[in-house]
Length: 66
Image 1 (cartoon, rainbow, N blue to C red):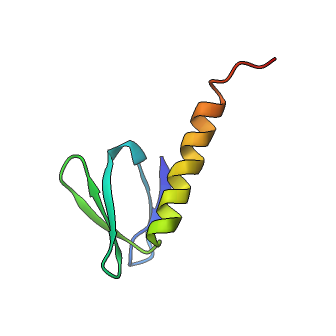
Image 2 (cartoon, rainbow, N blue to C red):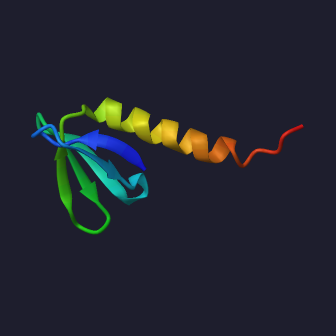
């Protein structure tokens, strides 16, 4: 789950596994696998970084500790 901001300033949390595509038009539009479109204040690069950080946290916890 990643925290994002709607254009009206309200923060919300999105399950990043639902992201199908991102586009900047010039606002960032997130298309989800269930057909929703969400416009957010963050730039595409910021959303991508949030997803990478989320996945890093998830997958690093799966690595064995030596």
